[in-house]
Length: 172
Ligand SMILES: [Zn+2]
Image 1 (cartoon, rainbow, N blue to C red):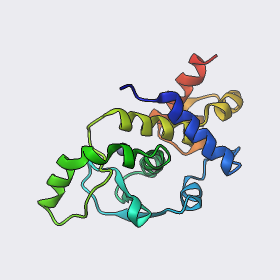
Image 2 (image 1 turned 60 degrees about the horizontal axis):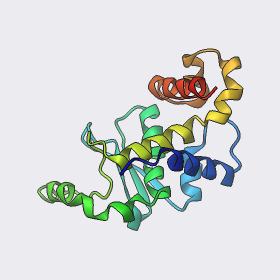
Image 3 (image 1 turned 90 degrees about the vertical axis):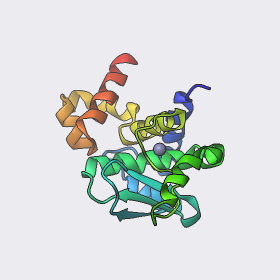
Image 4 (image 1 turned 135 degrees about the vertical axis):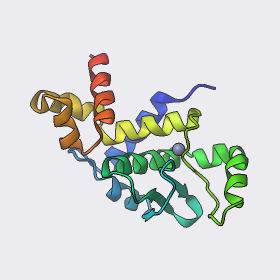
């Protein structure tokens, strides 16, 4: 099965429309609370960006990460929720749950690891489109003029800004 790139991006645009968001930086925290979720910053291993527990209606993020990374993690976790990954993926977490059961940690429903399966790709695509919507960037690009301008205006990492820039160039 292939990652549903178009579906993931459209899900992000749908949420932006739902909240009438037309300007950057995208208020990702407001969207999350609008969706009935709260955000908690927790002390996590550096390799873990965050995870989501649907039953707590909470997204947990690594308190030690840079703000740009936190925003991407929030977008990514929101993507898992919007794309109903929890239901689709319920069977795939046995290895992660096994690992966490050896420590005293809570059960990880969406632990972020280096593992890149199709749900992770979809959640990343969702986050990229949510934080730097291509339609917005097409309008802003002339004015912003550089990747650094995109970084500041959208409050995202240079990596996320570059990917968004390459997308609008490719889409022309
Ligand atoms: Zn994920």
